[in-house]
Length: 184
Picture 1 (cartoon, helix red, strand yellow):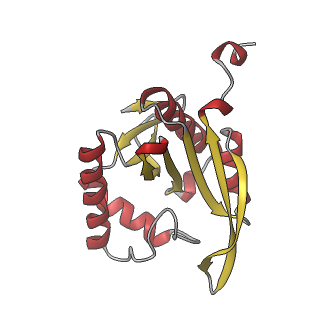
Picture 2: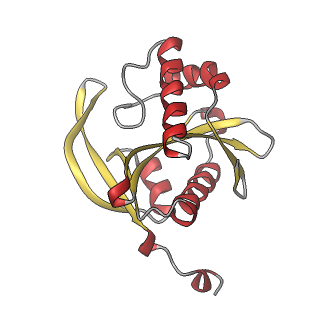
């Protein structure tokens, strides 16, 4: 388990299936890059969790993290996918699960904790994230964590009966300020 200032992060577990199924069912918006559109049943959620657990065994690190408040209430997920070992890169996807408790402070804290782990412990060089261009809340969280918008993929996602532009964000380990600059 990793600890942030406002959140705890832990690897997804089989016992999370019912919770994730509820979150994915209630999720408003596109799922194409963070969560497959095909997740509609509890069995499919269980299959996805098994895939994350298998990936964790293979990579030696979690492929999906649940972030919780300090009291242990689950608030959302951070999915780590598209790992490219040769390039020391992966994609992160933030999924807010508990809309009643949605709070940028929780999301930013959880994402910053993952960023620190990715760069400082797993020796990654590049993290990417994508979100619909119109989703200013998600973009704001990524930007506040140091990501920069690299490109807009025109009409790259189809949801709610229409095509939508998708913003691709990137954070390099070299984008982070040295520790001595953070304290001044």
